[in-house]
Image (cartoon, rainbow, N blue to C red; front, side):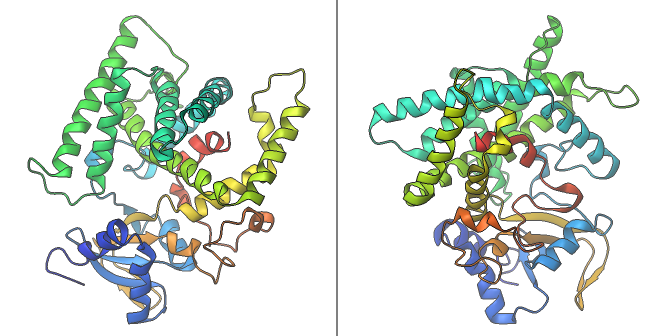
Length: 395
């Protein structure tokens, strides 16, 4: 269980941030206690917890909505009324609003008409820059696209400031929750208040001039449920913030890792280029930009995306809390304990993926074994941003 209060928090952070070998944390558990049912007791971030890390155990937790509730480490940072924090009917309602806003024909069209030209322009600019820091440049263009799709803002000093506030917010999500000046958590709370102010100001400005933009904010502002009810301002702001937190980092990381792996995999890069060039040639006389209708034709591109996010393990774990005493595999999970669904260990397990640390898009010629591919979580709360950003990753 580790040190008093801290438990194994320092060990977990060491494996993630310093050693950069997070799977070794679970490997140590397995060596000490055996594979068993894939459930291990620990103490993290001031709370007793269990870690589950097998397909069966993960599925049990993720699909048992009555037994396990939501447990984000710092819920106020992403918003108490965001889709990641609410449960039951409230979650279903918010999820419906978000999916409806994302799946509007105009939203899908925006990816083709707005996102792609920005990416093409960025690639041309990078070619003239010589050496670049890929992670930095990819984050810039990703955030510019998100600002356009979510709040119709073009790059400006304000969007640069918003980017810095989100960076501070994310840093706080990954830190120990000590709330005094100088700590990452304290800084994250300040960043969240500033983001609230900016987005609420934008909401008010749109209402004053009856302005409707073709973006996520307008979609969330104007949609109604079956009873004719709209989202509150708090719900609109909380869900924009939570979707940016969930989608910005994951999309930028996925693109960065795709760039890294393709640079080291000339055969995969050649296949990817061949597929995209063939698609471009087939569109002679029509718009060269890839449309939503083109995506099903991009078979190899889809495999590159799947392999990239498998290896990147962008969301290494999913947080839950036991709503009651729960028995699983002969072990008791006490009510109130945190439950960490450790999904990343599945994706690097040689029992499930041959040579798992090798980038091989062709492994997706065959589907993964049931329950072994959980990059977006699972169950009734499968990550909504997997739909929101899936197309943009391919493009």
